[in-house]
Structure formats: C-alpha cells, structure tokens
Image 1 (cartoon, one colour):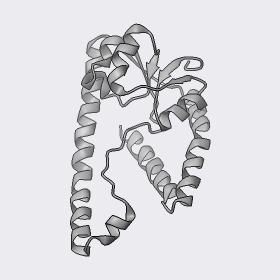
Image 2 (image 1 turned 180 degrees about the horizontal axis):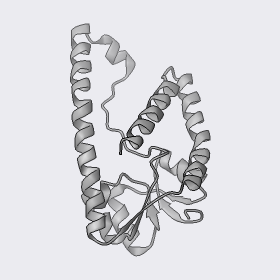
Image 3 (image 1 turned 45 degrees about the horizontal axis):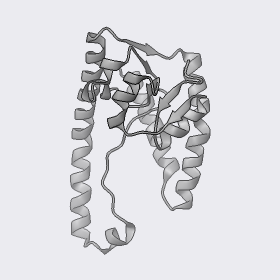
Image 4 (image 1 turned 45 degrees about the vertical axis):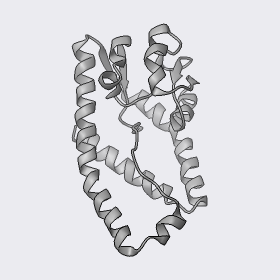
Amino acid sequence: EIRGMKIRSTGLSEKVTRALGAVPVGMSQGEAYEALQKGVVEGTFAPIETLKGWKQAEVIKYTTECTSIGYTTAMFVVMNRAKWNSLPADIQNIFNAVSAEWIDRHGAVWDKEDNAGREYTLELGNEIITLSPEESERWVAAVKPILEDYAISSKERGVPGRKALETLQALIEKHVKNR
C-alpha cells in the first residue's frame, strides 16, 4: 500500500506519486540511497536497474513492479526547432539515421541493466511484488488524468503527445505480454 508513504520522485513521477495518494519527496537519484537508508523516504520511483547500478537494493527489502503504467526513463538529445530547421537536409538525415540505429541498441542495454538490477535484489534476499490486477487498475486510473494533461499540453506546444502516449501504451501491452 503506497498511500501515505514518502516516495522519492521528481518531475512527472512526482505527479504520479501524488495521484496514488503518496507523499512526493523531491531529490536527485544520487541522494536516494542515503535517504532510503535513513528513512527520509520510504520508497522511490525508479527503473529497476537502480537496485544494482545505484546499489539501492542494499537499503530496501521490497520492490513493487507495476508494468501497466510504464514507468521508465527516456534518454534523448534535443535541439530547438529553429536550430533543427537551419540544418541542411543531409545533416538532418544523418541525425535521424544515427538515432534510429541506436534505439534498439540502447533498449537492449537498458533491458540488460534492468535484468541485472532484478537479479541483484533477489540475490540479496529482497522481494519483488507484482501488483494485483485490481491495484494495477487503480494505478492506471489514477495516472490517466496526468497522461491526459500531458497530451493536451503537448498539443498546445505543437508536439504529438497523444500519439506518443498511444505508441507507448501499445508497446507496454506488447512487451508485457512477451515477458
């Protein structure tokens, strides 16, 4: 039960934390280990790879896994539209080609690190708890208004946020079934 717990979360995950009834506590990932160790926070929203990569499995006993809301971190390089539009087409094509090439490579590395985090926490005797279907649906319902706000604000900025969300949700469904 997450309600009332102090959860390290930032940005969008801060909104998710609040929507789920928990208390968001903003801090960097680098501060999370000590905060968990000292009880400043009772949990953290983070990819499972942090359990090994940031050694957080040393200071937790339980991990809650909820694949239905798709919490993850995205890595990307951005530039403003004016700069992009000023680049010659051949340079834009190079950016697009290299980016496309690295999608699968980055995803494979991320999956490997997530699996290492999972294995590490289990080796330490920690437990991974998968949400019940009922609780998972509660989380999905709680997060839905946040995602809708994202889609609307993205559209206002001329960004296809709804399309991105639909793509993400389709990918979550596909990959959760294949797990």
